[in-house]
Length: 161
Image (cartoon, rainbow, N blue to C red; front, side, top):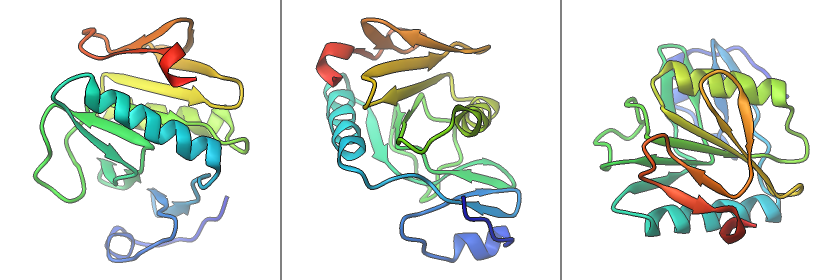
């Protein structure tokens, strides 16, 4: 993980390829770019768009607190946010694991999304063909279907993997 001390203003005025998370003055690399990750990300976004009248965004900056910005693999809103960098909590955030990802680092992201008010957080593992959801207290493996807490969005795992 690459880290470099910077300010919020510097982060927001810079371009990173690929984009980086910003956590309390530190830039954090994101593990991206592998085919299986990209395929699952695209498939999930298509299924989410087909599941209702939602705004689905891929790899878009979200300000989760005054000093933290995350870039989830996929996020879902009931309506398209007005701002360029989202500050309102999404209905759903989905993170797709890369082989290098560690659950301890993923847990910090989950905590950030939950603290900003995101009610549903999914984690997908394309290599092990497993899905998890954060239930508010812990990360739980899902067997057949991912759904939001209000069941407004439902995705069969057989459609994903």
